[in-house]
Length: 250
Image (cartoon, rainbow, N blue to C red; front, side, top):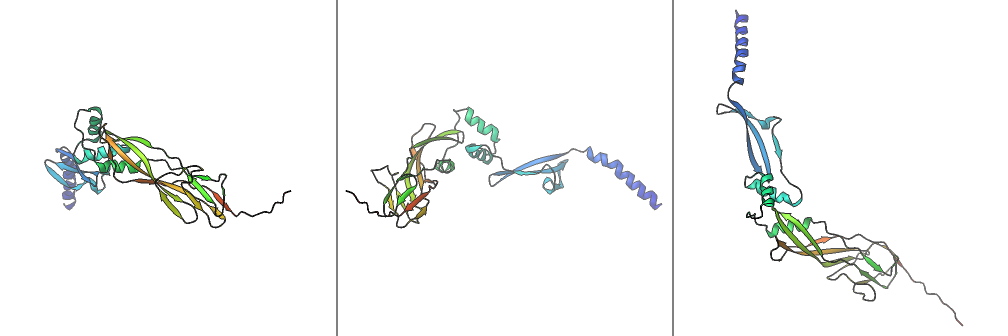
């Protein structure tokens, strides 16, 4: 008898299993934004009820991902997420429909974009040439770094940048440095010089500090907050001691 009851219970479970599968059940997706990223989870609901488990507990459909676009459009994507819009449609709409009122580009956004630009390092020039100089000689240093222009896209709007080298930090390779607002000049100007006190090998270099102005969609120019300093490559320099030599003449 016990075996019969057990068999009936097992048969009843088999019969009832398809009935549950035929109920109005579905996976329901929910989203929330955490630190600029979309967190997606799934819950299994049947007839208005929610199963005790969720997709977070190991379901293959659960994902936690940050949606981003290329380059500066990542800001547009984050803005779309924050207002609950589809990033692809939102950012494309801003780019394709110039008459739409786009979100405001803030000075902070421009400053962040300016810091990410791949600005060129300055190339140091040394005189005397050929990688040699003398102890107690006014060795001349200079570089040639002109103004730059760059354009980036922020929130679907064009931001133009006028970039100027406004400062130079000279590393002479013997532990001493100096800072100037000009790039030096070739001989005979001698604007930036250094006297080495002892012989040896040194590796001087110069760092360039850039400032910038920005314009949004052809509007007025405004200063960018902050500066960006780009280290320059070092050059090999050998400091020699001059030896006096008596030369007789007739």
